[in-house]
Length: 308
Image 1 (cartoon, rainbow, N blue to C red):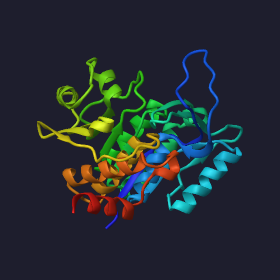
Image 2: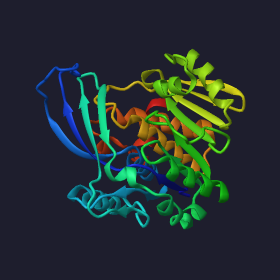
Image 3: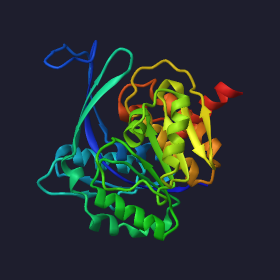
Image 4: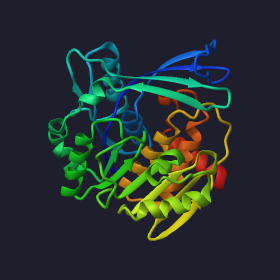
């Protein structure tokens, strides 16, 4: 039976260019194909969770421009509950500029625009969604006050809180026992621990340090090296599922969304991590954020093919 996930976060329009290399300061480069898509960590993770089988309520802040209207149409098409999406007059939706090199690595620059206007009142108005949900998914692309309000509502209604501490930044949002699952990549783990995180061994040490802050579970994603998960006082390395890389954009969001969806339906953590790993692996094989987010059938077929 599908679980219910509430996602509080950002929604963007993305402009993606493939480049022969990522340019340095002051350097110009002729780009290859151009793709206009939709992204933002919150929106990506909501769509990833929906495609992975969850019922999803999105709490986002948009503008009143043509891209904001297109994003709302996308939510309707994908079956995202958008009752609590606010469209602010006179503002533009968030924007992302993404450069992708031939190896699939990327450089991303975002402008928050309407995302930065999310208020505590907007989140509080969505309390009925928290009453129905099993999992809350958060990131770091909306004001801290909005995230803190969401955590408060989740604790009130016994909802599991997953925080993807991305992008890492100075924040007043505490990483403590109110965060049930903390998800970070290498650079975000380094930001929170002040130690280099370059592989599974370092990630295991970092996960122990982060677990001491209060979260029940720590997930450190390591790209091509898989992930390290700390839970119940022990850490475990989950190896990657090798694939040919086209574009790493939204791989972390795909992982987070699939993890939220499977946990919301009651799957145990090891199985949910396997689904999330498969979702992230499928994601990097496709260009663009939105087109690359895999659906449940594709995730299950991929796992069956690789592990049967």
